[in-house]
Length: 97
Image (cartoon, rainbow, N blue to C red; front, side):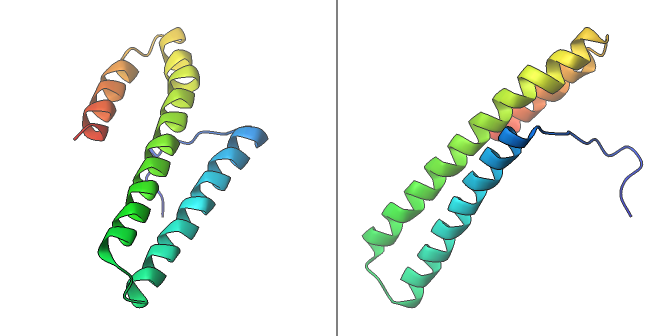
């Protein structure tokens, strides 16, 4: 059962498709690295693929964070919920660990 206070965000079709496509590519990259490990590939080759995955995840995070700010944060501030700013700051701090 979900938390009664769980937040949701409806995404329009283009945003949803973009995010899902990015995640699908990342999943494929992770499976590729798994195969490289199984095939006992050279460490540097695997590390380069891991670096590509990290870049893809960073890109996904930037896209999602930008969308969050332009929609959720702005809408909350406009409706008087300034607590969303604290949530955003906390989120950014966690992302930048």
